[in-house]
Structure formats: structure tokens, C-alpha cells
Amino acid sequence: MPVTRRRLMVATASLAAAASRPAVLYAQAAPRPAPTPTPPGPFKLAPLLYPTNALVPNIDAKTMEIHHDRHHLAYVSGLNAAVKDHSNVASMPLQEILAKLAEMPEAIRTQLRNFGGGHANHTMFWLVMGPRSGKPTGDLAAAIERDLGGLKKFQDDFNAAGARVFGSGWVFVTVTKEGNLAIETRPDQDTPLMDGKHVLMGNDVWEHAYYLTYQNRRPDYLKAWWNTVDWTRVGERYKAATAGTLVI
Image 1 (cartoon, rainbow, N blue to C red):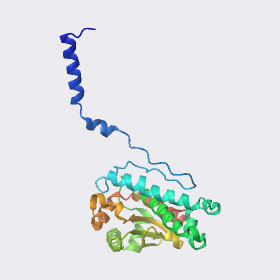
Image 2 (image 1 turned 90 degrees about the horizontal axis):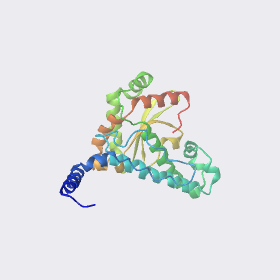
Image 3 (image 1 turned 90 degrees about the vertical axis):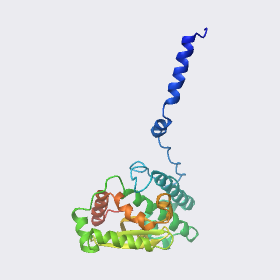
Image 4 (image 1 turned 45 degrees about the vertical axis):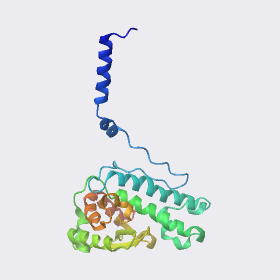
């Protein structure tokens, strides 16, 4: 077909219009890549219940993506590898493995402690956060007032405990079946589950949890993290603990 002056003008205009479309719109619309599948084994990496950018500006989307899709995945993968040749351990619930570490096969005990603790801690971590925050209510609010001196003192003491953790670790709130609360810290990926205790909530103070936004300013991260706490879910965990049904 001969190229007329009119056809040439139409084609040129179409190309110019396409080039003027902002590429950022397509980048924003692109779906988030699925996490790398967990290697075969009894333990799985559950997807986040909210988008990775749901906690911005307190926790940035890239940190959430790397933390969940890579760091947590590595703990699950390591745990599955550890139990691969130990079917009796592989069939046990994670909380039971951690509570009975001293009884686990010596050859894999360290892996169970590190990878199993990391899997349990992170599973809890994602569940107590979310885009809705608010404040504690009901029995949970009463327990915080009774055992921890009220919300403000509790947050200050929790932050101070987290800031004191040397190197990497966690700061937790433990809860008894009677509903009593206490602030505790653990190094590395240790968890109060290893002492037969229940974890109400906790914050990860490994640098990978905050370094992209806060660099070395852990106290700033600890303070901002409270804006991500989903008190509705924490309240549900408190009810489960007092009912004897809280697991991880």
C-alpha cells in the first residue's frame, strides 16, 4: 500500500502519543512477583495478609518484601532441610519442637533452634502487624494497665528493652494462661516458646527489619513500629492465650 502524506502524519502522531504515556503508570500497575516457592517439606511460608506497602511510611515496601520473601523463606527452607531425614521430628508441630529442643536429635538441634525459632518468630510478627492500628481495648487493655503500667509506660519499656538487645534479636510480650503479661528479650532467633511460654506479640530488632529506612537508628524504628501494630489481632491472640488455644 503506498504511503501517502496523510498516512505518514497519522502514524507519526500515534507514535508520539504512545511515547508520551508515562511509563510509571505501567510500573505501578504491575503485579508483585510471587515469593519463591518453599522447598518441599512440612513447613510452609504463608503469604502476607496485606500488601508490602501497607505499612508505609513506618516500614517501607522493599523492606517488607525482602524480609518476608527472602529472610523468612530462608528460615523455612532451612527448617525443612533439617527435618528431611527425621520423619518423627517433621511430623511434630513447630511449637512442640521448640519447647522440647533438649529432646531433639543432637545432629539437628542447632538448626531447629535457629531456623525453627526464625520461622515461629516471623510467623507471629506478620500476624500482629497490619494497616489498621488503633489502641488495645477490653481485657487486653486492662491487662496492659495492670501488668505493664498502662500503654505509654508499656511502649516506653518495650522500646528500651528492644534497644538494649545486643546485636540481633527480638523483644516480646509473653502471656500466661491466666492472662499475665511480661516484657522479655531473646538473642538471635530464640523465642519464649523454647521455655514453654506463650508469645502475645513481638518486634524483630535484627537490622534486616529496619535498615533500609532507619539505617542504624533502631530506637527510631522501635518507636515507629507501634503505628503498624494491629491491636485487633493482638486482642484476639490474648483471648486465645487465656483460652489455651494460642499456638505460635
